[in-house]
Image: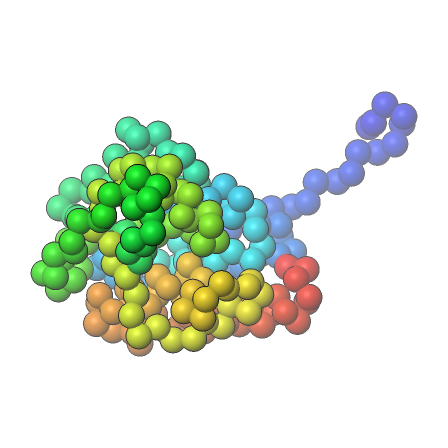
Length: 211
């Protein structure tokens, strides 16, 4: 009870699996998929409770993936996350020469043989808007030292509930599924998840963002 005798507002029930309000649970869209690539998703804190985000659905669907929220990561924690035995960490991010003016070094080259050995790869994904992900990269020097995997031949984004600043900018889920499909050499394997994400977006639009 509140001090004035009024009842306190009831807390919304939250799904224990997807951490979303029960009325907006996304678990029905989870599509389990496996990849030889290990996936590490670094999520900007402002994306954690964003109903339009795709990272949690991606994490819940891709076997063995890790999702960690933060903007500036403790170097010891981030070093541990990146140091997966037998795997080379690679950042899913385009080369950004303009960032040299900010003091960020050029990323090391990506050894082409790594793309032929998905079981030796840790794919690091930054989840956030372009501005947020760029800031995350800038604020975490350990990420500067990672080879980068840029995307190519990308399909058009269906992520129409958030505005992209360029036609080739995809949601975290779309970009990661495309990258995993390229590395695994099997885009078909990730189509069920991509289609489930499309259904989620359709439902979000239908309910005018009330999910």
